[in-house]
Image 1 (tube, one colour):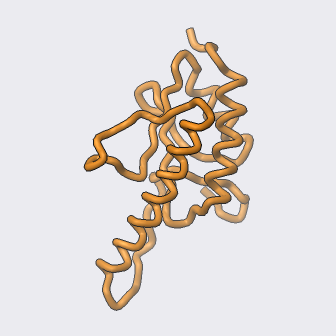
Image 2: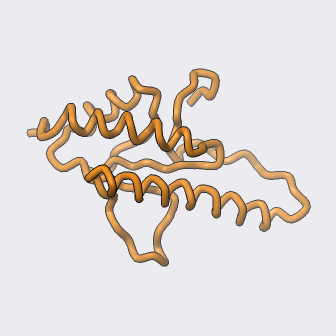
Length: 127
């Protein structure tokens, strides 16, 4: 992912740059709190748009949000999202969206808009 291309990268595949702080554990907690808040925003908005994410026990939730693709071809959905500047991945029939420290609410809204269009465009195309 190249940040200068303006992509709303929401994938956890990018390594986290080391945080230099007096208390590294405090910085790590702040990052965790931030990415969990972005993931919660994403889950809430997905549910409101009729594309709920897979649910997990609250104790096991992470910043990774899995959206079932149903009969959609993952390659088609991923290509459409990439065209809109949204980088994510697909695993086991689910779209995997993972906000990270470099994302903000604007990225989440951009990803939601692109995802909504891609899901509508490729409804039932696998097979």
